[in-house]
Amino acid sequence: MTLTSTNFIHISSSHPTCNAPNPPHTLPVYQQDVDLLQFAENLEFLEAEFFSWGALGYGLDRAAPQLVMGGPPPIGARKANLDFLTKNIITEFAYQERGHLRIIQSTVGGFPRPLLNLSAQTFAKLFDEAFGYGLDPPFDPYRDGLNYMLASYVIPYMGLVGYVGANPLLQGYKTKRLLAGLLGVEAGQDAVIRMYLYERAEELVQPYNITVAEFTIHISELRNRLAMCGIKDEGIVVPPQLGAENLTESNVLSADYNSISYQRTPGEILRVLYNTGNEHLPGGFFPHGANGKIARGFLKMAY
Image (cartoon, rainbow, N blue to C red):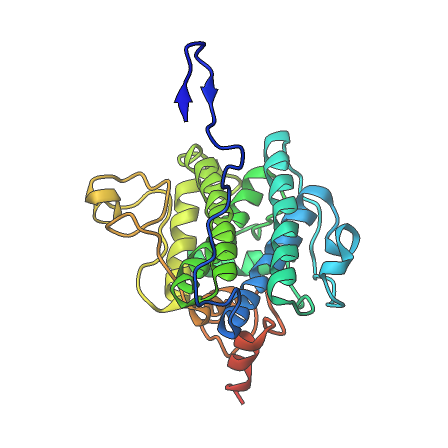
């Protein structure tokens, strides 16, 4: 590539390379890759339905019925009372999750959508457990934009840490590329949610007179307790010993001492999403358990 006297860039090759060559002696997809990425499909179903219903007032059965593969419709999902900004954000998230499901299913196959419980009661129970007492009135994720984003704080981060945990276990070049692309967007969604809440950190969530920052701290602490594997989750404000380089109390992104994203195993993720602290005991967002070989394997081990 050279710069001509007329200040136009001249491309020396008429056939530029745009894709990296595939690694030699490897397959595009390995069986273990299939199981790991299909496990992630559970979270993508959860996100797709929650975001689609919250922003648009309908879910995959109307928007993309081919993706649900005969699975039952979610319980309790409904349109949220969102302001213009929040609705735009969540609408984009909803469309992104449809794409995630489509590319996962086309790459490693899929399974019927598991039964999801997205009712206000499910979120209310989770928030009550996070605070250690019953909020009055019960927390309603569909009440307004701020409540909805606090509820959203619960979900994409689990996909993020799950993809980070699965990354070193993948072998196929096609599945590695897919995971990297999925991880990038899940991390972006989590960052948007955290920044939205960080800007409102000292705002009181009505009618509880509890700050936004306190809500995130309690939710993160609950997830750490349920997962039972130490601190891998942090609110938007932290003590300095958990901040970047142990120098910040602001915590726009959740990360370890070296500012590397935390990782979680499928077992940890199910303990949190089931809201039971037990990957063998369904509940929470998945009243009948998640689907796929890994999740169903945990259920079989319970009997």
